[in-house]
Image (cartoon, rainbow, N blue to C red; front, side, top):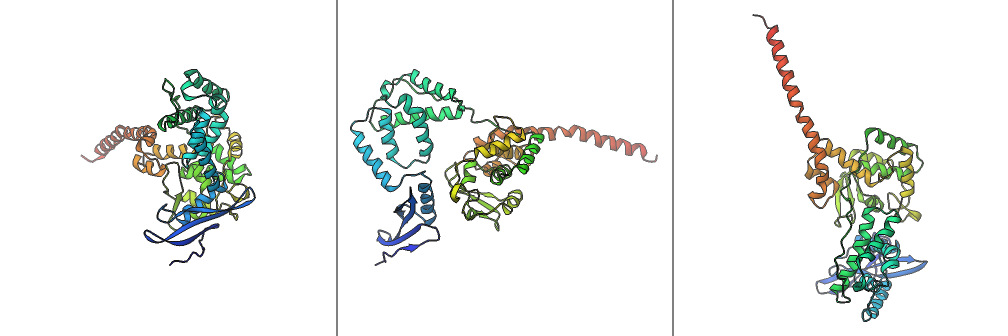
Amino acid sequence: MPSLKRHKTKYPGVFFIEVDGPMGSEKIYYIRYRLHGKPVEEKAGCQYRDDMTPSRASGRRADRIAGKEPTNSEKRELEQAAKEAESQIKTISDIWIHYKASKTLKGIVQDEHRFEKYVKPKLGNKEPSEIVPLDIQRVELKLKKSKKSPGSIRNVIELVRRLINYGVKMRLCKGPDFNIELPKANTEKMEDLSPGELASLLTAIEQDDHILAGNMMRLALYSGMRRGEMFKLKWSDINFDKGAIALRDPKGGKDQIIPLNDASRQLLDGHPKTKSVYVFPGRGGKQRVDINKAVGKIKKSAGLPEDFRALHGLRHVYASMLASSGKVDMYTLQKLMTHKSAAMTQRYAALRDDTLRKASNLTQGLIEDELAKAKENQSNSPE
């Protein structure tokens, strides 16, 4: 019979025991960490039943330390609260408690913030069937007064609709007598910089003393990596020998591999290393969650437009430069940008087509040059 001895892994705070299972010997992974100063030890998952690996267990441990995922104890408390509330669910706040406890949700931290700050104050005490269009408009108005972007407003209203749909689907409540329409958000916005603006930005980065912020901006420009992907980037994700960068849990959900190009390699070779496993660590060497203030300062020093997004905008600049070069096809660009569908990459197609059109328009001039050369050679030839 396999031993219940604890076996260490190469990941800090991750160990496993071996037990007999339906598929033979199976590893059960556990994680250990400190939360609010108290030690926590809990099960992360089984090797076969949960498809758990040491790497995934380590990722789950990091998420719980960062507060992105509740502990097993907190999950049990949430489930108990949901069961108790299920028989008396009436309001949007009641549905939120049940919804939050129903499953592990990837964007729960952002949803929690949106609910507590914007949804609960206006709609928390209302039953879904009581909600009228004016209630939704009031939420939108509050967001607009707070100068939130169209995308942020859309996300909040989408959360309201999602909660109500969940409540109706689970037969916890009756829905309103109208359809909640999402406000339009210009998610197709493309940001670009002129050669002069780009030069100013690189100068501002060079002159700024925040090395991490400057190098994140450079890496976004050189590789097209997303802000969240750079926050999660570990030194172990960079393969200098094979020239590749592994993107862990990216926006699309599935891990991706992008090339480590020469500019990115040179940048990372010279990037300062600390005791942290993260390339761009936050406080205490933990995963960084924000860098807006530092990159905003650099953007301001460079004199860039106020609505230019310091990191995501540089991802667009990266894609725009490749598309407008006329040397990169849309399929390749889609892979480099790790877009899930070609439709997301098509916004850059016009840049590529315009470049190719300009190149094609050189044809007439080239023909005229060739004819002029032929005429000159003819006139110079002896009779």
